[in-house]
Image 1 (spheres, rainbow, N blue to C red):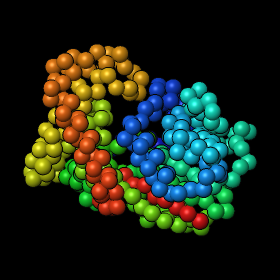
Image 2 (image 1 turned 120 degrees about the horizontal axis):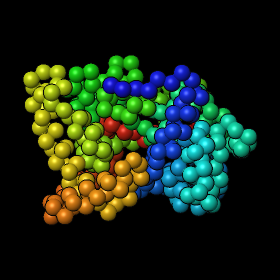
Image 3 (image 1 turned 135 degrees about the vertical axis):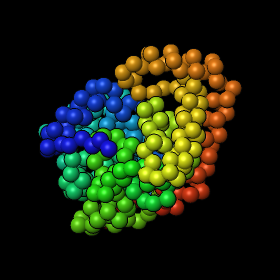
Length: 321
């Protein structure tokens, strides 16, 4: 299990500076953006106010906030100036600033959003304090992040794998090296409790089909290793993992072929990858497209019907004070 060890916040900034220069976080799927649109609409916020996308990266979800809250003043912030430069370029009608810089705006926000930020930050307690310092007296927050709750497909795969779950951080073995923690809803609520924020609603995703979807959309290395049978704890775990390795590998191949014409992160070897995808598409499109459609439909239905079930691997927490 690989985890980046940051000596301090400065080291974290430098690490993400390099990743953003390599094309990091250049794309999120329509499914994920639609889910945030839905949750923000359900908050029934006032027609006007000040909103902040904390840890905005390239501003992809900042743009979503602007679309769903047209009467609001929307800002985005990040610790990384490369990310902020990209966000400004992609969203000319939105104001962005580097957190803690002279550009920081002395505004108190009525709504604060973060999307997969808290698992990355150098110190989550400091990040919570920074958010709350920017919050108005009456404020709503929406935070999305991985969770360590039992029962999800990802938790099961990790439980069957040797050293699959870190006993301290709760992190699953296959996660991004820059993920420093995987928490429960109760642990996250404790971060914000000193600032008088309380959880009002909890939603969960990726119980089963959602997990298959994102694994099939991931890179080949992750898809082939997340259920690697030879890492099983017991002979029974070996066969359970083998079964899932076959299913997930097939799903990944179908998504890879069917996504030949889709937008993605333009990272290293992007052109080479697209050429290979075209060959797979020509060979497999009669099977790949229906399989991708079926899994996407099941993942959407799962979110609609099971988002209140805590046995997911991702959570969306609504805070208020």
